[in-house]
Image (tube, rainbow, N blue to C red; front, side, top):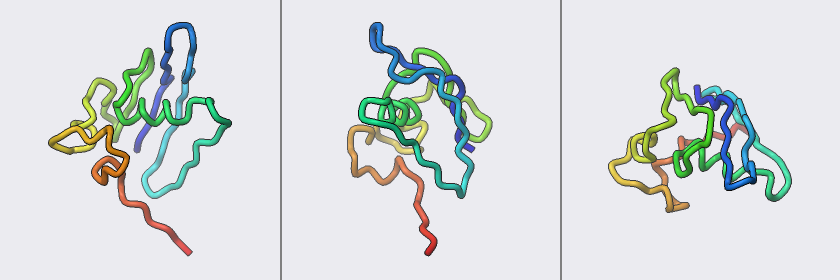
Length: 97
């Protein structure tokens, strides 16, 4: 289970993600939707560890991983965080027809 608890990030006086709490269960598909500039990409960057949260936490299988580096979160030996094509940072996706 992947969870965020009260996840927040501020850029100066601008709050880009404001106290978002959500749980993502294994085997489920969850969509994060909103208009341009709503903070969707910033939220994913917080979850992945590419950005540090101003407040709140990220949990994976009951363990607080908020302070861990991108390689520690993904199990990779090197940081592929800036590579959009990195296959190590995302779990396999299964589609049902």
